[in-house]
Structure formats: C-alpha cells, structure tokens
Length: 312
Length: 105
Image (cartoon, rainbow over all chains, first blue to last red):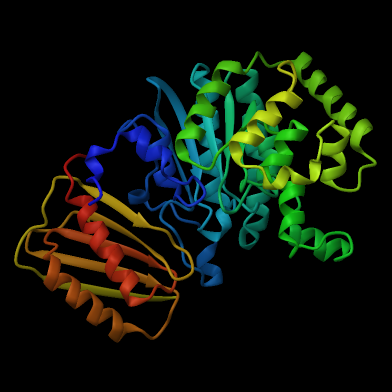
C-alpha cells in the first residue's frame, strides 16, 4: 500500500514531481509555500485571446499563462508560469499583457522579486503582430523593473523549452536556472533547418538539439547560472539560491555582461560543435557530458566555474 | 468549433465550499474544465466549446452518465475541448467535481 497523499510533506511531493511533466498550475503550487498562491486575472474572468476564434481554434480561459503572487520561504514573490501544452506556451496578446502587467506591478512595488517559469516556443503566429509587440513590451518591462531594483529569475525546464521571444526575455533576466530538458535558444531546431538547410542543422538529430540548446550546454556557457535536476523542489531551491546571489543592476553590470559575451565569442566563435566548446573549456572526455547524471554534471559545472556575478 | 449546452435537474447539491476550480489543459486530445458554484442547488449546466464537430450524441451520453453518477448540484461547467476522447472528458469532469468539493476559497 502506498501512503495517502496527505502524509507526504510538500517538499517531498515537490521533490518527487517532475517539473517537465507538471502543468503550469502544479509547478506554482509546489514551487511556492503551500497554499500561498493568489492568482491575478484567473480563469473565471475568461480573459481569452481575441484572435483564436478567427482561426476557429480553441481558447484557454487563462490564455496559457498563470500570473499572481505567493510566498517563497516566507518572503513575498510575484510569479508567472507559462503552460507549454497550450499552443506550445506561445505568446499571444492577452498572454503577453498578463506578464507585462505583472512586471510593471513589480517595478512599482520595487522590493518584491519576480519568478518567470518559461515554457514557450515563442510568439503565437496566429496573432503575430500582437505577440511580437508583447515580446518587446515584456523585455522593456523586465529591464525597467530591474533598473528599479527588482530581481527577476527565470526557471526553464518545460516541454516547450524557452524559444523565440521567450529566449530573448530570458536573456534579459537577472539570473536563470535550467534543467537538462529545458532548452534555451531564439531560433528553434525546425526554424534553423527550414531557413538554412538540413546540412546546417538536422532538427531530427535529438542529441544535436540537446547539446546545442539544452540545459547542460547553457550552464557550461554561462547563459544559465544554475543547473538543477528535473523536479520542482530543486527549482524552488535554485530560485532561493539565485535570489540571494543576484547583485545590483546598472550600466556597469550591462558593460560587464557585454564584455563577457564578447570574450565568449572570441574564445569559442570558431568552434563547430558544443563538444568543441566543452573541450576548449578544459573538460576531459567532453563527449560524455550529455550522458552524465545531474549530480555528476553539477559537480563538473561547479569545478568549471560560474557566470561572473558582476555581469548580467 | 462547435458550441454545445446541457442543463440538468439534479438530486443533490455538490459538496465543499470552494467557489471555483480549474483542471486540465487545452491541448490535442485534452480539455480544460472550469467549474463554478453559481447555480441553484438542484441545477447544473455545462457549456462546451469543442474543436471536434459532430459529436453531440457522444457528449450527451458522457454528460448524462456524469450527472447521474456525481449529482453536481449548483455547479456550472465551462469546457474548452481540444478533441479529447470520452474517457478523458469523464476523468476531467470527475477531477473538477473533486477539486471544488475541497474546502477553501
């Protein structure tokens, strides 16, 4: 007999729940302190997309994103979680406006951090112009909130990864945590193959996709600050760790980030494959990195080094 | 898209104190069910928007069975369907009743 659910502590339940498999709502329930989540513009308000009915496509009552506030280890946080299974978690007009509004509220309050649980293929092309505008508005709102002193942490580990405009927004955050199935990029595998040919990038080569865009590579490149195992509790602990580590934001940190990226391009710009980059970073037997279990990879990544704290 | 609406008289009020709950996701072969406690105790209503056109008879059977089994008095169900199979619909409806039967907001 398995124990009844109520005998399991929230931390145990979060530890045994795959972030990748969970819905946006389950992720928030288990990431935040138990029972602390309060939703803004919940599904009962039916703020659905004004565009999808034109295409005879089904709507979702929350337009694929859950926003609100809650508590993390007792401290207040604003949160947004994309539902990657509804239209690939893509940004439409309402979906984007909910995140923009949350970030503007965070800027006004100035003292409460924001967690964004990305799970998106990018812009929802049925509402392309509104979606593209939403990306621009969100990027501006992220930078304005950071300039007001708000810490913005991105958590990436969902089935749709973090692509397109989502990748751009993630690049604007104070810090990112990523798991192995979480992928971060702008152009996705199919987009690259369509535009540049299968010789450039074979989107059906899953190993190639994962070692080019997957969480391990993003951690080793310094794009993500923390690598976590695929469960909600590890993401919760990573969010707490990053909230403690993020430094002040201003022109100096942007200049340091520019220098870090220029240096990365100088060192690895000529590399043909991610394995070449890992080898250049001094990792012995770099070809084995994709097979490493999470704990061994985290130990390796910690030895290789971290993103400089004065950048981003 | 096809819109369907069902209204039933039911034996008893649904348990619990929550005012609303939501289960499921609108995805291929899946659906979301938003349930709200907004009707008189002896009534229930279901509003369905479905991407699969022409399955009214199947919905009638699935919902008749659900209402008989759970007696969801006082509840209005709003469904966005991405072409779920009847067993998935039954499961989500049962989950929705269980969610709103919890105590709380």
